[in-house]
Image 1 (cartoon, rainbow, N blue to C red):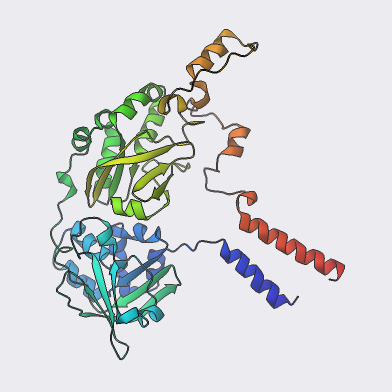
Image 2 (tube, one colour):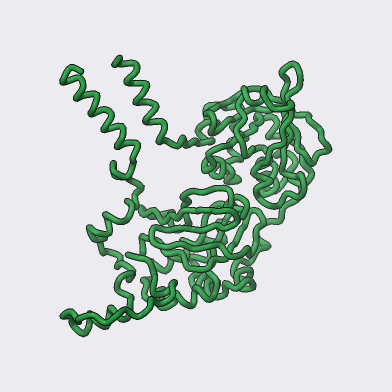
Length: 417
């Protein structure tokens, strides 16, 4: 087998198991004429929303155009709405732009995904005119197509395409004034929607409450367990150290605005407020199935049951159970969040101390919070993923296949096949 064929096959095997990540900030850094646009993507936290989506098209504009937008003295929240209209929820490379079926396409955007866009607001019309000219226009702007394709900045088929257009898309709804987050009272909103216990814990921990409030301006999503769930969990919460109580509360906040539509359309792991300033992950995974959105930690699963508020830059949702991070608990809190198991049939009693028997009856020892200096057991390390983000070779089937494939080639060379 020729060396070229071997390398080609190996490349295919490797790429087949790889999800291509992208970083819009780094992509735009090499284009100084787009630096202002790049700056505001980061300032509005749109950059992180773009990076976590696998299929996306960004319509960028140059510095003079962005300076014209800034000169209008709009709030940062309104600017975020406008720029989110320039992020298409689909891939459009140059070739696809010139091969649009029936020459026109209506595409949804991140602004439409916020849930604030009414009717056709939040959709962009792309039209491929005869002669190769491609025009863009916000659908709620009277059908005006006055922004045109200028050049391709970066393409990673079929993950991300960054295209420069001649001017910003005009949308009356996206440009409408957006209220400042200072008008929001987080604990009051939660209390009115059945999350009083969680809200009271925030109020009783000023440093944590301040962290939540400080993050609203740049975008914040809060997942508050309903009172029934928190009340059930309180015996376990009271056993935590002050530091772990802080981490648990922060674990229920994400420093990015996520509309319910965004949560329903995007699966994946996300950082939390507890992640910042620590070497541990404190992440959870968003999973959706139709209209149902669940948040999964390494040891538990919670379901979103309702919406307290969903107005950019703030979103608050209710949960049916408390989020329990693997960094704080050894195993799932089955004794608190699940119905008690049916009594087992009597078995011969094993020789246990009275203290051990009492612990088993309480059902607390298995998922008791780890002490600050306690190392996880070897058994825990085998069950749980590495909290630093590493993976064993056996966890990656594609890597395993590559090793087997390479080994077979080496053996074949040795025996002269």
